[in-house]
Image 1 (tube, helix red, strand yellow):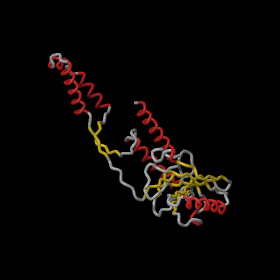
Image 2: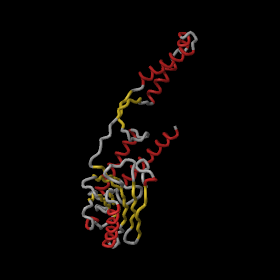
Image 3: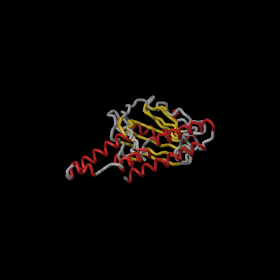
Image 4: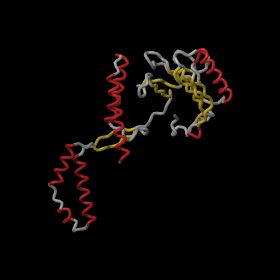
Length: 267
């Protein structure tokens, strides 16, 4: 799966694929919407080498395939990633650099990501996807532009503010506005609207929050709290070996996110 916002399907081409008991891989060529001028394309190879595989045979096959691709696309950027288990691609291609230096399963680094750029990424361990038994890995570029925060003011409504406004509007003499406007509908509407706006500003507190340009519209404080709790439970579970609390936090954050996203879409 390739995100269309990064690269359209028309700019993706399958180059090589292979499947055997010792090795599975798929290589695609991508031409993203934004690509540095020094690169003609990006070649991505997804690899799976089973634990019982003949490691030497698998690496030799992968080596020959990547060498042919390098000859065909000398100006392309190469990324080779997947489950290598006990295999090490650097024994065949020492010019490639391995970016994952953290454990991905049971204290071992079984998943690798290679590229032809030294120190290009920083690897961070994250919780698994779904019921996978391997941790997911977040690869952050060693150099990246810092996202600019945007500050905005929002009104924090509560049950107390609702009841206060209801009590206020219940005791208002609304005929006063009609008489003052001399039965002019425009003046009457403006005066009532301005009075309601003033009451809301006086009763409902204003809070300043910071957002990022890539933040989803349904992300609020409750989601951030649950995500932090999930990450904390994941890190504690890796130390203690008990992932029960992490699973509960993961289900809770997913339910809350789905609930809020559905509410946004239906509005």
